[in-house]
Image 1 (cartoon, one colour):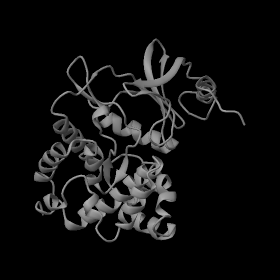
Image 2 (tube, rainbow, N blue to C red; image 1 turned 90 degrees about the vertical axis):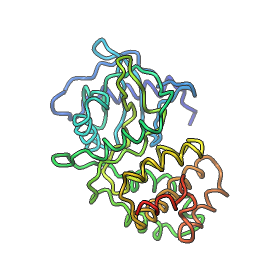
Image 3 (tube, rainbow, N blue to C red; image 1 turned 60 degrees about the vertical axis):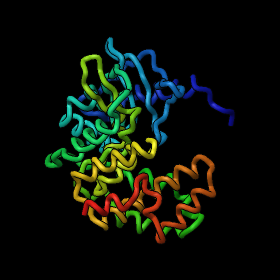
Image 4 (tube, rainbow, N blue to C red; image 1 turned 45 degrees about the vertical axis):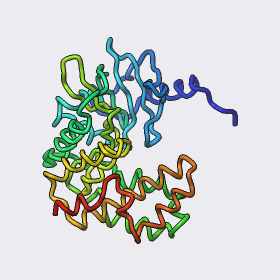
Length: 294
């Protein structure tokens, strides 16, 4: 099979978008124009971290973002959570099966007080009332971390053992906190009107490890900034030893999968080997800071 070029991939994506799927309120085709990859300072991409399509296009006279949720149920969950935080998330214009169309947000990346804004945004998301929200249709642990690192996990432990442990820690079907594992600096912008917007919400879900969201948010910060952000987070958080232990294990699985994907097999294997021995040393901040908040 010959390699597909970007043009061919975009053409296939457009065909999928314009299929007459069973979408209830909107039986007509979307009618997208000028479909293109999402671009930033690191280049252009047509896929997010989960490998699902993310595009920019023109639709009904305006620029929009188009992306695939994990499932049709997940798309409805994102729609419902977005409606609860209309000043923070882009407005959802249409949902078609697992596809979501939102307004395109113009803005500048945050240049200062980034950690402060990350924490503020996460606290708002974690504080969303779950009453009336539909099932998430996606679990960050089961549907993202585990599939991505299964090969990595097999280097140090049996698949069955790791899968059971991970799902025991955080099963999205039974959790009642709205989670956002991707509040990175790149995903927060300040609009010309001065609002802070979160522009990447493809991994929204339910969960029970809010500290994991914090780890994801600060993972690429310099150490001094991570530690300062951790102090602020933990000063107003109720954190138990069990929460720290669970988060550390989940963090190892997340980072081991990332390292394996990048080809750093040795680092990935070392992390997995520490899953039962000293998982907390891999947290992006000193574990004693968290224990001091108990």
